[in-house]
Length: 288
Ligand code: B12
Image 1 (spheres, rainbow, N blue to C red):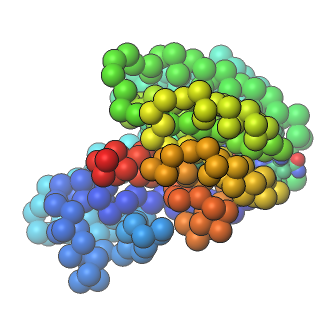
Image 2 (cartoon, rainbow, N blue to C red):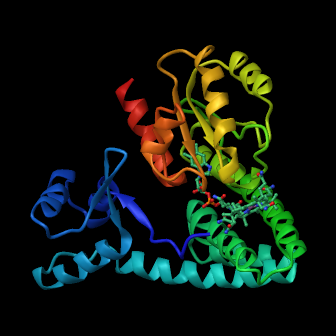
């Protein structure tokens, strides 16, 4: 896999974290004070650059947003390392205890999924890629992670009205279902109704699910293995025959790295991760 990732937030999120209006944050970018670049038409800012910007602002006596954010990041990395160690050791109950401790110490569910569990799995994937891991260890860790997600999902579930239906799945030949489960829970936490169809789904099954779902806001197709791209393209061609024009088709996952690639596969949109996906869904909902 790639080198350890930098975390990015949208400029809107950056503005919220800084406690300023979006246009103010945009001005920082225009004036070269804050590093940002465009991804799929959306300005994004690396968290490191945001923290650097903030530290430079210290003198101006503005309240420091994210001393707490920095602390949170450091905490997350500690929990993530502990979780990774438990997952590698095949220690299921220890793994759950790490997540419980993180939650007890104030971590949000979204952060547990995305800043602790997902990076711990990514680190295990890197070890596997570097040939430093027996393959069974990765499979065992995935089994534990799947059970962790089930427990987290039960703990974080909420009742009440939802804001629209989002269908998630992966096409035939694509076996990474854990990523979809995590994505699904994070989108649920943002109060969307998610139909998680899982991985390795024949096209006709996907189409049938679409046919039987009312009020679909968006469809998200996940692809983590590079060889799944053509299956994604095929699926989207078929989906176009059955979906309403205003249903947005998203693609995402480790095999798809930009909006341009998403468009080449026939999708309307791409999102880097679950947080940006939720931001995009919010935007679509507002435009309705
Ligand atoms: C567990 C795992 C497996 C398990 C999957 C079991 C399961 N039930 O899910 C098994 C063992 C089956 C497996 C198989 C393979 N794997 Co694998 N796997 C992983 C691993 C370690 C974790 C995946 C995971 O669940 N991560 C947790 C998720 C939540 O993290 P995430 O990727 O950051 O997810 C975010 C985004 O991707 C995004 N996202 C994901 N989907 C979507 C969809 C939409 C619409 C949107 C908007 C966003 C979005 O949002 C998520 C949340 O923020 C990853 C390593 C990694 N970096 O993740 C490798 C990894 C994905 N696998 C990889 C590979 C190469 C394979 C194999 C080809 C290996 C092989 N030679 O057999 C096969 C492919 C099988 C297939 N055809 O699908 C590579 C993929 C590289 C690439 N791009 O091609 C990775 C990155 C490992 C590596 N470092 O090289 N794998």
